[in-house]
Length: 75
Image 1 (cartoon, one colour):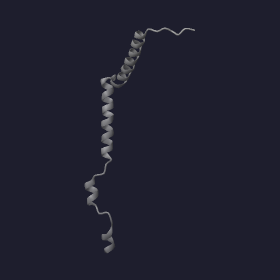
Image 2 (image 1 turned 30 degrees about the vertical axis):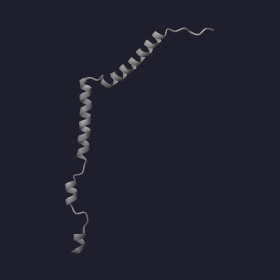
Image 3 (image 1 turned 135 degrees about the vertical axis):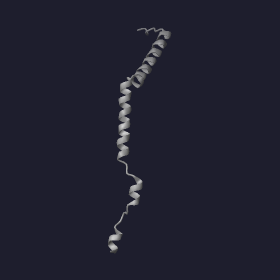
Image 4 (image 1 turned 30 degrees about the horizontal axis):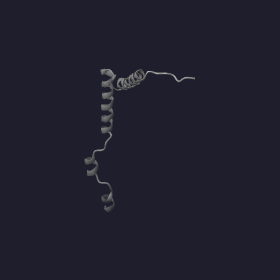
């Protein structure tokens, strides 16, 4: 049973082609979006940030209000 004879130059080129294809697939997933898709994603991020900011407490308003009712107890 003789071992299979392979051409090392061809094997090296095939391995390089496979690596390039893997990189190309990753780049297609990362950069292969239309302008409309990018704008939708950007709008969703902006809406999420706006929604989060609208639920934040204003520190100036909460600090100026009294936290206890000690004035009512003195009367």
